[in-house]
Image (tube, rainbow, N blue to C red):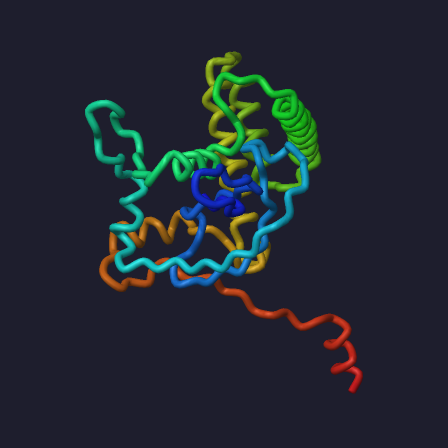
Length: 240
């Protein structure tokens, strides 16, 4: 979490400019990130009130890949009153307020705000449109055999249900089909070419890091970004 405040001096609450959240689990070790992120006052990203941007430079270093991956499964130290909650010591009430705003934003649990409700409505409308178009496009791809292997699997499952004259296998085939589509999307969108080199850690890299990783191992590769040659320059070079 990164929070931006002005400094109004001791005893006076600082003005909250905005916050950003960075998912460290999606960053690659031994890599430097130079990014611009929009500031938000609320947790909901669809509350569209411009607050400016923040320029961050990050670098993630892992000394042991196995320990780093296993640390994501470790629960915080259990306390008697708070259980497994994460605790943070604050110097005073002003620091406590800044920490709360940085982590939570202006979203106060149990308090209704019209601006947050409008943001949730925008989000739900977007989910509805995306899901409707995604299902429609996927069904068209299956019917017109855009992906022959996927269409063949659905055709064989359908014929098996017709041959057995039963719908008992429909839930199992449905779950298998959804998993196959998710795996296909993972293989397609997880490529470096699609993400310009900023691909999150892959499943194969995590397995290698957990099984074979250790001190100073490098099974999880750093970000690989190379500058692409512009087509206009390439064409002029071929003409010469």
